[in-house]
Image 1 (spheres, rainbow, N blue to C red):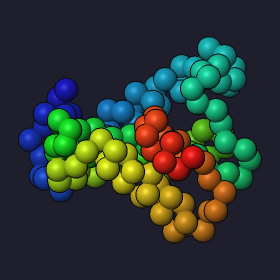
Image 2: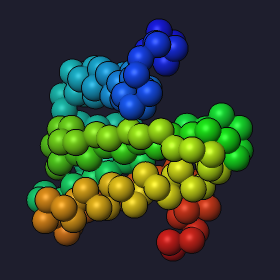
Image 3: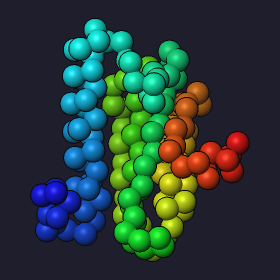
Image 4: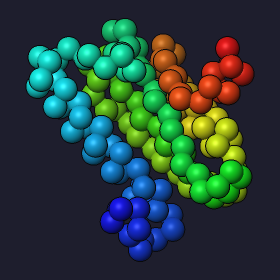
Length: 131
């Protein structure tokens, strides 16, 4: 909560909001690898195929619609974090912020000339739209 409530410049607030999630993910990944000898047992996340990248998206909103932010992270086939980005948005809905995370993750992969990537979201509506 200290990171979320930190009094920082507006332009880096979204970074402060994303850092706790990245830290917890990395700690969980290390613990899981230590316990299971590098075998992922969590059915919710699978490593991408070799030479592919996997982008996980998320969003945070304060009301719907309301002030929100989006975030995504990009990992390689061994699960290493390659890139993460978070950004605060003006008033939007959950679906708009999740779609923005999806779009920005895809743009990032294309900007580094990677065309084999998986976009993962927990938004059922976005999954149904993109089918």
